[in-house]
Image (cartoon, rainbow, N blue to C red):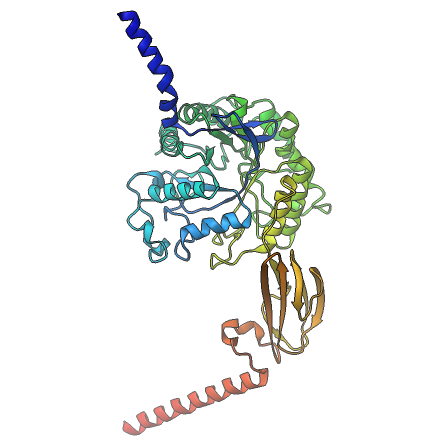
Length: 514
């Protein structure tokens, strides 16, 4: 009888253990092998390469405790635009307070008329809605522990008031809560270790040792996840750091992965992704950006900091890169993308979606609708290198080198344009790309209409001309109905004289009364 009961028990375990496991995590597994990320269907065994073309959407890591843009747009529409633009992943930064069950977002950050379904929700509940809807439209999510205290990026993964143990508990909590969603690919365990954080030092400041510790705990709960490990600022191992010190090849926070060669993260190799943060002159003006041979001097620097890892068959995902894409920063981003393509490093998360980022700007402009297509154009080069069949959406870039659309008579400016569609009408352009120099003598509107498939777009550039050098003090909002410069000045003069006469008349009446 006992043997029969034991056999029944064993059969029960065999039959129902897959069901128990399925309750813990979905029918998917992510691995990193020889520089490529794979997504595998656990049931069928089918495994496909996955190139992460992502963008960071920040806000949960700040005291507002919610992603930005919700005061201007519906949250689902933002996600749909991310997908429409060609991204397939979002990196969600957060801080410790935002993942507490009772934390609520700052009400001024959400327009509840546009987002009625977010009313009365906690920050964590809003995060879960974003993850769930992203899954439904095919967007992957990377969770990023960006800050502990929601005000600054701490150098280490613990502070005087926040223990390493609590930090690890936070990750276990998130893995249990969000591990059930198949689109959550993993944990970016600590944003930008810097300062005293080291790599290979063997003490409590050794980020490599912490990555192993927290990684083991996360994988116990979410074995299908990937563990994203950023670099540090310094390794604090003298014979490694001396290379950058002698040459002046200083690293950005989170960029230095030079210690991996001698001190790799000792987790299952297929579960580790190295994720450096790399920036250009708009974030900080390193001396090597001022070099006479810039940007040709950059590949050897990138190679030294982290690029060499591809030759060791490690998998790299650029965790942050970006900038304002102007001047030297444009040169830097163009060179960086060219190098990434040459190295076949196609996985990335661009910083960032938000226009509120002071040193980089965003993919969206201030209205959270208009797209910075110049940034998208350089991003598309990288996406198309990984997937030549990728079809970028129709867009037009039309701009001038002038800092304002209000110009003086005789001012000489450069106009340039680019579109990935066919020009079907324009009063200046006959090709899809070009530039021209013009001397402005009168107000004008340049327009271009392009077509791609069944889509048609029109873009205009309005230039207003006034006599003299008054343009810099007049805002474009005053110029909805353009007038000639003489009319504008005479009208303003008449108004000023009228006000003067009124004041004199009031003064005279008061004087007579007394």
